[in-house]
Image (cartoon, rainbow, N blue to C red; front, top):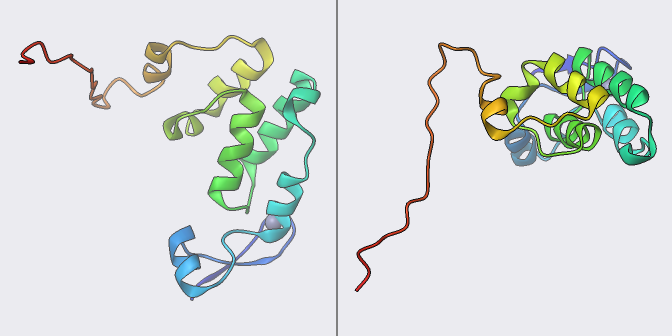
Amino acid sequence: MNISICPIDGESVAAVTKSHAEQLGVPSGCQTCRHRIEGEPAADSMTKEVRATEFDSLMEASGAAFEVVWTRVDELVGRSTLTHELAYPGYLRHEILTGLVPSVEGIVAKLPADKPVVVIEYVEDTNVD
Ligand SMILES: [Zn+2]
């Protein structure tokens, strides 16, 4: 099993996916980072500047398991984020600081122009007997 070192606290971490870690019976991600993130105050009790600073630190160098980071990002932003949004943290940081929540079209527009987007729309069946 490959081992990586958490850049924040130097803890040895299994360099495997969450599901592989579960199969091996080892923790997923850096447990020190996990406990630190899970122990942070409730996001709605923090100023937008403090939330943005914590968001920056999560984006820069977190050895924690992805799901822990993603859950905390959702709390700091104040909504469920999509994975592609984490690739462009400047938009989420702006959203934290301004409180301006993009529309679904705005979230999709964060993708690079050359990325294909499949839009799935529910159409009610009008041929019901
Ligand atoms: Zn760590």
